[in-house]
Length: 297
Length: 269
Ligand SMILES: Cc1cc2nc3c(=O)[nH]c(=O)nc-3n(C[C@H](O)[C@H](O)[C@H](O)COP(=O)(O)OP(=O)(O)OC[C@H]3O[C@@H](n4cnc5c(N)ncnc54)[C@H](O)[C@@H]3O)c2cc1C
Ligand SMILES: Cc1cc2nc3c(=O)[nH]c(=O)nc-3n(C[C@H](O)[C@H](O)[C@H](O)COP(=O)(O)O)c2cc1C
Ligand code: FES
Image (cartoon, rainbow over all chains, first blue to last red; front, top):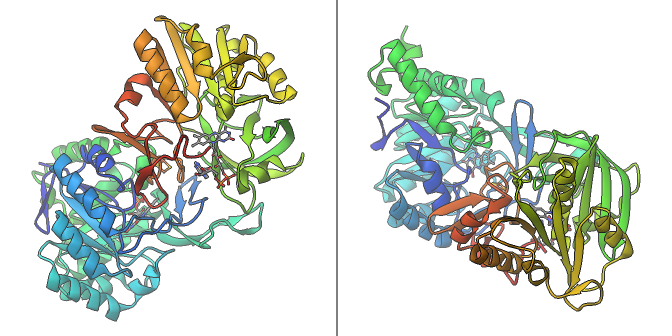
């Protein structure tokens, strides 16, 4: 009942590990994949990055701020991680690729190593110039086209809520050949440290995730669903089955989970059984019957 | 766990380069073995074991080894800092078995709290504190105030001569519960000894900590079939788990997420 097809990937349950959440080694991804339909790796580039110095997170009563700074070992190292994951788990692995660091090279290496899909990150609000890139419709169109011309696995584009018209950008991605949209990345924020009286993070900007951004994620997914027919992975503030179902009704074919893993690394298990119970009590026979129901007028 | 403002009540050098910090900061009652992320304003946020907590006052034992720890140790009474915690999972400190705590160097920090918390519950603990060489009188006093303590130095300059594990070995039997913290080569010896004797053992481990809440993957320690987050599944792990961690005393993730050799011991000492 919890099975769903998302751009050719078979996900059961319709839950995905969000990018940047524990997607570092094959073994931890295999561990978390147990209760998920698929996992997304941390965002990888051609070059190794250490990320920003600590502090890199700041918990809030309603969510989490982070400025990790896209730490990653580079694809030459990471392709072994992808290969090892394929040996450990049957679940699909979506490799997140940093849009500003040779995405064609990185994506093709990832595909060779066994990636089941690529997620193009053009939406990190505090590193790699990705926010600016994600606002440049022409650039995004070009990268998506280039990637599509070399890849034979599905391509998702991860969008930022920090842009004028997310529906229009999603439409551009679809026309350029994208197979799916992931939305949303974190909401761009700034935290001021009351003791130093300066921005808390070295990068000044950070990203807000967790419960606080859920209504924004629902709005974005709702707007994107109105504009495209490719599937959407809805991400942002999913902390329980209710918030997951809301995204599905707004138009998401599957739901990503990130910050909620701070509560419980196996929270997806609970969320999946909650979705199942909701489906039973509401008389749904498949997840696909629920996708975008909120739009039927 | 939200960040809280802590106020320094005392920062005393108890031995050369080792400081006792008392910080007033209301926290959720921590368990021995848990840690905090501490950040002096404008500097890095770093993990430190809880060396004591009571009545809204947090104790830390800090070795001044780099920029942030030196800044912490130089703080004056009344200075303020950020404290996030308690984080991680601690020791099974309420164990009714005959308890032996084995510390190497600043690894003493969480064990001070453990011995103290057990004492408050009426439970006894033998503490073996090992150092390379002579340590300061204030540190010795602080340890002796805890009760049943044996101090060991590798060069024999004070206390028993030898490393903490050799000195502790005669106290460890089948029915012991051993708590340990220190450099990984030393912890390996403790685990090997306990496994051969049949004693239960728990060690507090260290890896580079970034988020401290179990989602970034910076602190992973792994084996063939296990992957553990030091910040959230640990920092305390039991002997059965540790023997499965092939990274133990060998490998650690660097800041980019590359697995690299652990150069001769703890990644952070
Ligand atoms: C769970 C845990 C508990 C700890 N408890 C104590 C304690 O009670 N007392 C104590 O003196 N030290 C403790 N440490 C070690 C302490 O965190 C480091 O000594 C400190 O971070 C060094 O920072 P620095 O800026 O002074 O030095 P740097 O010059 O930046 O680094 C010196 C060494 O510390 C390591 N280090 C730096 N930042 C971190 C980090 N974020 N996480 C882990 N290691 C780091 C470096 O890898 C290096 O080996 C603990 C570490 C961990 C993981
Ligand atoms: C610590 C952390 C690291 C993240 N790293 C990445 C990343 O590398 N690439 C990316 O596309 N998104 C990254 N994100 C964003 C998440 O994938 C997700 O879009 C966002 O956190 C919203 O979902 P959530 O509220 O469930 O966390 C990160 C989020 C957090 C909290
Ligand atoms: S430090 Fe982030 S998972 Fe442990």
